[in-house]
Image 1: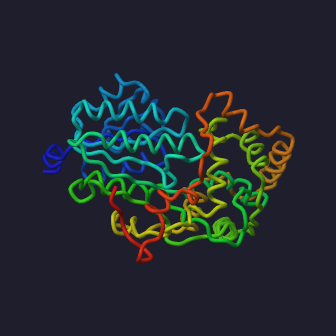
Image 2: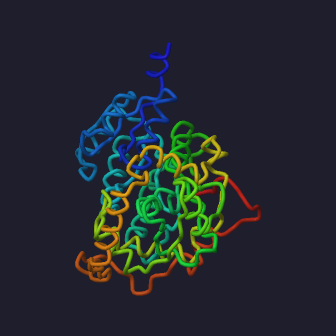
Length: 373
């Protein structure tokens, strides 16, 4: 009976299936009985976990039109999620061309809360252009999922919090509530709902958030409770941020991405992620109670024994901190110039952009679900 039901359901393609939202999305779709083709860059432990859960693994190059065409063979709906890397517009153009050729019935895109035509970030302007491209076919419906600053972003500095008691990010004043951080799983739940029920969600734009706005000091306190120690927020400079990322690069590190992260940190300090937050999209669309930040950290801590206190780990953290201090900062303007990034003469941050404010500013009610695309 279950097998017959699965065969009757549309096949779904998840791009970046081993990523932050792609992996939980794939698991959630499989749990609901949908056949999923998971597009991954390489066969690793994450891909093996997806295969074990029942996903069909497609290993290929997401920037290759021929690979994307093959990935979409026999697929009716798809999740468009560009890798966290340069050339996002190239990826999205490849995806869009293949989707039109395959005559997909529905696509769910992962975009950005900041998306705007004149934004200082090239990555963000490419998201804006991608949103236009994906909607050019009248035969294919689209749902946009546009989260802001992920809860996962804070976890990049969890080691420092665990072993030195410091939450270090360039987020400005520690007492101002600036973000309602969503978990990866909650973002995925909104995307899953839109893929499963296009009739309800076609043409809508959703912005999943966490349950409440938090200040940097509150984020530090939540980390402290999850770690069982006191954690203090330290507002660092953009220069220090680049030193830290160069000295201790995350797995998806690139100088190009850091140049854009600095722009997003400026938007954070300006309060753009606090605009119209929190929403009820996770509850009303994803069908679940949005996870609070402390719970997200506790789940991460439980899965990482390396965060437990010990003298060797503390000494290693002190050594790493010294390495950060000795590392040369990135010249972010030079990074963009060396890559010949298109840089607008008069870019505008979100809250200086009338069009962005018109579509993103608070509405009559404090919390709503979705808006017309």
